[in-house]
Length: 215
Image (cartoon, rainbow, N blue to C red; front, side):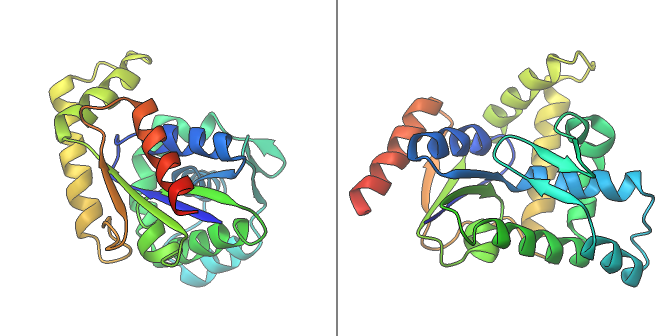
């Protein structure tokens, strides 16, 4: 079974998807982490994105392993490294590259071949698995998502303001929704859940309830 959970940054996709996967006993797939890992590997190995042949060759032999618990690159866990700012700031641009996008989509589909999965991202229900068994689209206002992101950033005390964080969310939404390749978009048959004024547990209960009702 494939459960797709899409939505913009800060809507709570990762937390919800991880907990839903735990409740159902499914594999959790964080597609954003996969793009981060690919970006990390390309930067680390100094691969030229402008050389399509070199990029394709590199990705065809990349030593990248994804599990529900960790991501491995060349045998080492890179969970922490892919969340650091140098990678975070470049992942969105790297994910627009058609070669990288094609590789990541294939990588995600392969992970789901022999597993029941809960997969979260921005184009799971529209591009990666348009025939997913269940599709959900989580959203929330820019202000709410900005506050959530700001709370996370404050943990590292990087000096960013709440206003800057909210504006960054607005810009990210605009870029993700208007890109040519796999834009952020709600699938026509997805169940939309606005998380602005409800807690994570309520969102999870709604998703689990819907799945069990339809299953």
